[in-house]
Image (cartoon, helix red, strand yellow):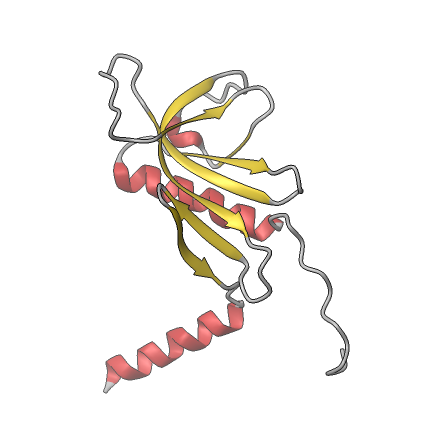
Length: 145
């Protein structure tokens, strides 16, 4: 592509690699927390996708108004990962404690936006694999000194 050519438009949807990464994130959080963590893909009216992360709340537990609640799962949902050991039924909806969401950004220099309880937390540019490898190599050199 020449220097004057415009870059191709960015997709407002997650790629298969990004969905795989988000799926692994949900599974890793399940292992780390020792609780199931659900990740559900949603889509806005404009077509922009996001993934919401949440921990299912025990039905027998007392209601906790300190945490934001979100419902994940159900017949038309796209859940990622292994669902933390929960049954693989597509018809079950879970009341969950909201952790955060990752949304595709429409800003030119951002790919993702992390949304917390109070709004935007972080802006993340897409990291190319070659950059990750070079950063690891730099880290090895520093440790060896």
